[in-house]
Image (tube, rainbow, N blue to C red; front, side):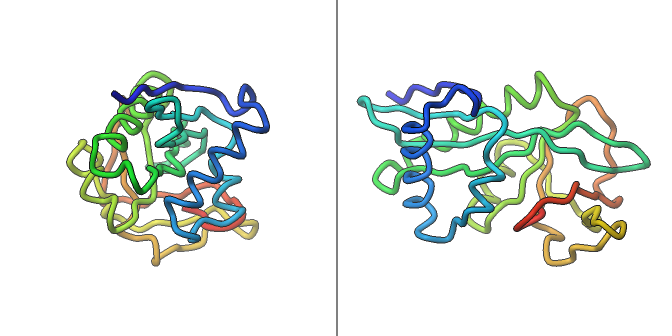
Length: 177
């Protein structure tokens, strides 16, 4: 049985952060850099435990997205990962369900950048692919991010969204989405 615990980054001991980082690095098979790790910090971590060991992780961090002339408080999902030996056993669904509860309770909407493998899971859970153009609010103003078009998913909340409209994220180092 998998048990999921929500813990703020500030409450994780340095040793626990190192364990989470190792899990994420293993799950992403070396395709998870330092900027990706930084994106996962500063919010709430969903830690999935089984038989005393960490088998899954995901984080929801606060971000600002611009849409329809409004700034939206967004729970952005990052670093969803499951240890390879525990895949296809419902761990990802348990982690994402915990993150979705946080998003629904505290944000205008949820958002994430889905991998090709993850897109079907999120779509099955009610996340919607953003159909409109994506951009980032850079130092010189909005910059289009066409490489991210079609890969951003949102979990609607109380705010009306036009999925064909433009969506702009706040700037950050590394992958902006």
